[in-house]
Image (cartoon, rainbow, N blue to C red):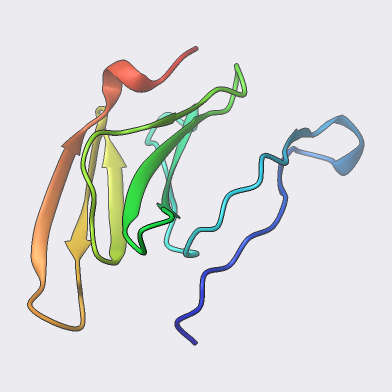
Length: 106
């Protein structure tokens, strides 16, 4: 209902062997998998009530923030190292395209 959410992300084929990402991050649930399933893009809330785009590298477990700040991100796709979506979908929406391929640590 508009408030930031947070939780523990577990990526696995079965819970026993899963990789757990438990770094404390408040984010909205609008995340997308990369087309090759090696990374996840997720909007993370900053202390200034803005959002940054976090790139979670699944094989390495590394989390990197992409440059730039946004109001509220709604992510649509993550293909060929490019995340696409909309910033502020409810009020004055603006299409975004972030090239993050170099941030994915394999």
